[in-house]
Amino acid sequence: MSPLGTQRRASGPPLFCYSEPGLRATNPVEERVIALIEPTAAGLGFRIVRVRVSGNRRKRLQIMAERISDGEMGIDDCSRLSRALSPVFDLDDPIPGGEYDLEVSSPGIDRPLMRIEDFERFKGHVAKLETAAMIEGQRRFKGDIAGIEGDVIVLATEQGETRLNFSALSDARLVLTDKLIEEDLKRAKAAQAAEHEMGEGK
Image (cartoon, rainbow, N blue to C red; front, side):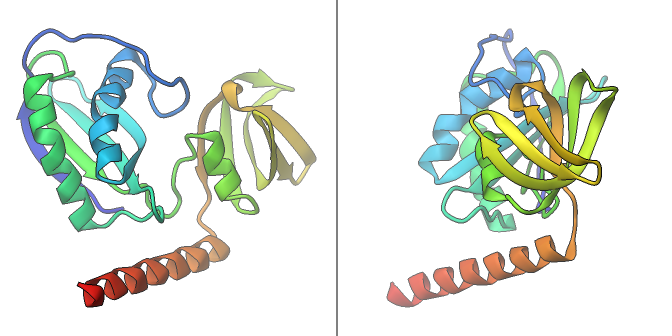
């Protein structure tokens, strides 16, 4: 994970609005942040993976993002996105009251799975899923992502095939495996090669 942290002071009353529902946000403040920053991030070629606000006396705003083109997110990317979001927050700060720390980071290898498209992208890899309510006596599931059928996640577990509605999930992330690490290294090398070719073309 490539984090970049800065400090900010909130200003003005919070305005609540709701964007695309799902796992990317867990409360109205986080939904508000996504709605506020997504146009700027997309304009720079970044996808917002997840937003989390934590802390009591001093808040921490964590924005997890990745490049739309290849899913990578380096330190330079984090810095670029952080600088671009600074004037956005100056005009319309979504965090109610007091100072807070802003952290822009990559999803990491064992990344969270926040959208249906994430499950499709990482089909064949091991994931841990948690549901908001009990399903057949359990809330936590682990297995290979076998497929996606509409909004249903098909998971191949040790007990057999499990089918979970995406809307029933409260959390989901990849499990670090040799296969995942190998694919991540290949993807990183491909991204570096592409950047090198672009640099030579200038």
